[in-house]
Each structure stands twice: as C-alpha cells, then as structure tokens.
Image (cartoon, rainbow, N blue to C red):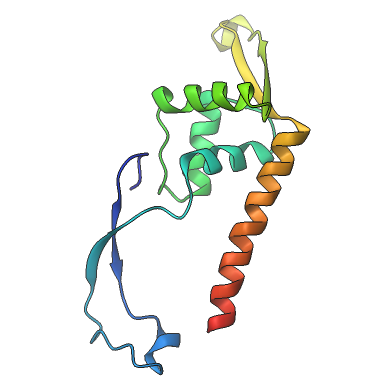
Length: 137
C-alpha cells in the first residue's frame, strides 16, 4: 500500500498480450520496487472533482478511488490542501456543524476553475497513457 513516500513492491506477471512477443516469465512472480502511477497531489485533486469536502472526507475518497493503494494521513492532506489553496487550485470555507454532529466547524475545500482545469488535464494525460497501453495490445 502506498502511503506517500518511497516505492512500493508489485508482483509482476508477463501480461498475456506480450507472450507472443517473447515475454516468458514461466508464470513466476517477480517483485521489484515501483512508484505509484498516481501522486498524492494528483489523487487528492481528483477526489475534489466529485465535489467539495473536508479533510477526513477527502482522505476516505482517495482511499476508495485508489482501492486502498494510496492512503493519505491528516498530517499529509492538510498541508497539501493549503498548498493547493495558495496555488489557486482550491478555495476553502468553514462550516459550522450542529451540536449533535460535534459542533466543531469544519473547513471544506472545493476546486476553483483553475483547479478543475488542472484536474481534467491530469485525467487526459492518464487516459492517454492507458489508451497507448491498450493500443499496444
């Protein structure tokens, strides 16, 4: 599971579409370090595409959207969100909660127009990458 720093290990098998090109790993698995194809920043920005959210909500969205491969921590997510805000990618506001829900205010973040543009450009890059891989099949 990728938690924000360092490579993770991945088990690799020869994909079936490469077997006819001489790839033969005898169905054995090999492990080697690889970086996650998605950065923490990109995952967090993509989580905001579906709507505004507060820190813990966004942490859960990233975990679900990446099938648990990226797990953000509170000590990571809030500095990233503040950085996004400084860069003009998100805006935030505090919202009071009713007393029965804790009563403490939560800071909600949402994409700005610039943030939405950057998030959509990221999606196009990733879609292009995976489209190129599909074409290679």
